[in-house]
Image (cartoon, rainbow, N blue to C red):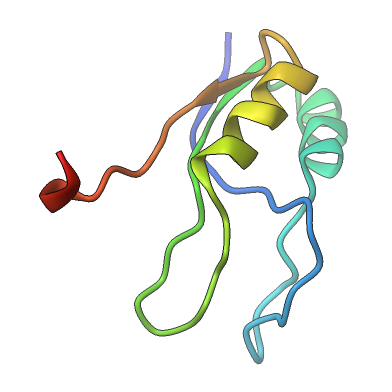
Length: 82
């Protein structure tokens, strides 16, 4: 079994980072994983102090629910909010 331990996907269009590849959607990741025989992926929210990436933990959970057994959801928790 192959598991991608660090994956990002973005379901909404947003301003891309100059000179960077566009972020894949969850569906695009699944298509790639199917071709590459990758069974699961740890899906992490996009964060970046240098640029605005409005992705919530709920987006990650939604992708995991949309593709059961394929994404292992992780979330961001602000340490001062606990």
